[in-house]
Image (cartoon, rainbow, N blue to C red; front, side):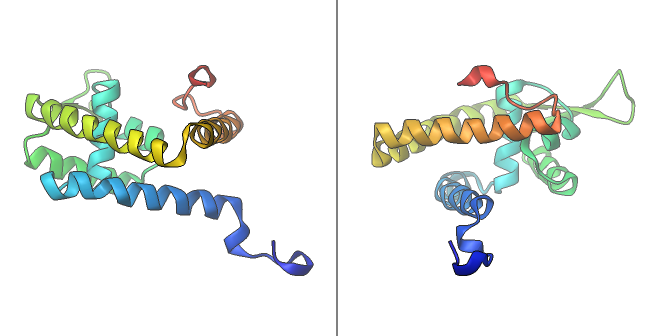
Length: 160
């Protein structure tokens, strides 16, 4: 911590969390960018659709904390590559339900396996004790802030 109570960005926990997330995200990004030419946002859109099934762009924004314009561009690119489809929502004609196409599901499955391999390698390099502690701490931070924001789409504390 900086002397005399002076603020030092390098010691600010949100900054450190962001730096760790960016470093690991860039490490995995090489996997899906090289083979599929996907952006980080495109991968995150696919990952949400692959995990949760059809949903709106608004839902993806809330789940992933990604700006609406970035999600919109990602959706357009994925649709152009034949990886997802849009269908007007029967409940709200202004909204579109997004879902992966068969090609999109195949790409998601392949990248998902690579994500599992990346995760396993990272956890092995950290060691089981450190990995478990980091996992628990990060989940607690997410739960604390999701509860404070009252986010209905936030991950449930039951994932611990």
